[in-house]
Structures are given as structure tokens and as C-alpha cells.
Image (cartoon, rainbow, N blue to C red; front, side):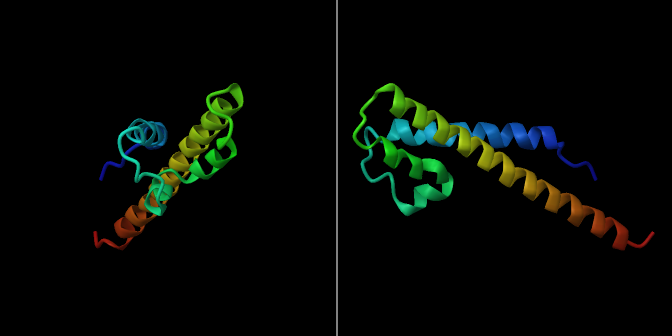
Length: 100
């Protein structure tokens, strides 16, 4: 059985880690119910945005936003890597147990 390469898992995790926060930021203009507990599952580093509460759009606020998105990229890539490793172990275990 062919397995997805780790490189593609990392690229997919990084893309997901960037696209989810950007989607939330774009939708926040028209949908005001964003920012619930459900959103913290997809963007856990959004908690850092509380530091920008009174800063508006200055350099500090943009730096915190960039750090938050970067941490989300690392988080999504890490979760993808852990799931990939678990999948590899399960596939190896199943192939060892299969009668020849």
C-alpha cells in the first residue's frame, strides 16, 4: 500500500494553518458570531489576539497577528505529522499481521 509522503502532510498542514485564520478574518467583517469556542478548535492560537484589543492596526497588532498565524501553521503541521506517524504504525502493524 502506498502512503502519502510526509512532505505533502507538512505542506497541507501549513496551507490549512494559513487558510483557516485568513478565512476567519475575512468572514469576521460580515459574520459577527465568529470567535466562539468552536473557532478555537480550528485556530487555537487566536487567543493571542487578545493582546491587540486596544491597538487597532499598528505594527504591534500586525506582529501579534503574524505570530498567531505562524503558530497555527506550526500547530496544524504538527497535528498532521502525528496523525501521519500513527497511520504509518497502523499500516506496518496490519502488514505484519497479514498472513502470507
